[in-house]
Amino acid sequence: MKKRILKRIGYIAAIVVLLLIIAGAGAVIWYQSNITAIYDVKCTTKECESQKFVVAQGEGASQIADKLEQAGLIKSAFAFRIYLTIQADNKNLLPGEYYFSKNMSVEQIVKSLNTGIVARTVTITFLPGETIRATRKKLIDAGFAETEVDEALGKQYNHELLKTKPNDASLEGYIWGDTYEFYADSKVEDILKALFDQMLKVVKEEDLVAKYQARGLTLHQGVTLASVVQREAPAKYEEQRHVAQVFLTRYARGIALGSDAIIAYRADQINPYRDKGDMSYLTSIDCPWNSRRCVGLPPTPISSPGRNALKSVADPTDTQDLYFLTGDDGNMYYATTEAQHNENARLYCKELCKIL
Image (cartoon, rainbow, N blue to C red; front, side, top):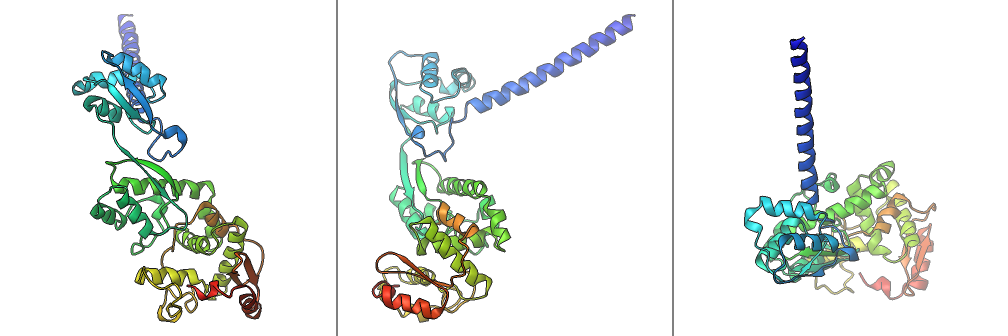
């Protein structure tokens, strides 16, 4: 009988210990989750903008924790107080006027409160259709060191978005256009990773990998073609779908894409200060960049495509046109034969067709 009782007590004790371990693990997970930022660095909505937060003279840690939670700047006042208890060096919270955002973790907020210094943020807008050269300039203009920017832009990244990108291809095309707010002391590498994350989110939302594969394209090839569409037809989605159809039809038939935007991109790389009316680049630029003579896609994207440009390659219009041009009036003109295309050029493109 005693053995049975002891055995039962042992079972109960083991269960109690197991439950305590589970509860402890759960508490750790809860704590770690509740000291992270409400939104991560990729958040660009108005909710993530900095807001004023005032710490009055004489206010203690508990009051500050409660005010932060009420302001929606932290997830849990209780977790905030635990953090201060664990981090013994972080208990001296200074009074003053601060600007915090929901992108900040408890650690970042406490660091500011310890020093009385608010982490400075910078706002940068990247636009669809822009190139890496524009990205580089914007990062430098925002205060990031030129050497750090160049190193970050030239680095190889192990990111899901870039799996099909050739190692010798630049990051052209993978800078997702949007307005972002970053901390001024952020690493440029981390900023680029945030942009990759944003673009990958769109790729997954639109199921682009599978849709491109159905057209015989890798993600990199789809992004590359979308970047050309972005430069050729930046305004309207339906025009982008039509332009994408022309390129996809030519690509499938082994016909040179015939995109002067590709040649112009290469010409800009050779001489960013070139004369746009210098049409000699049409013949002087060689393969694989001369899309009038060379079959296939360019080695890299030529700009950052927007969501609609990416979608247009996945879902082009159902036509068989092989030619298009943008007229002097801003309208797009399509043709199925070269003769029709030449007539469109004669009638509608007397000025723009003289500019590369």
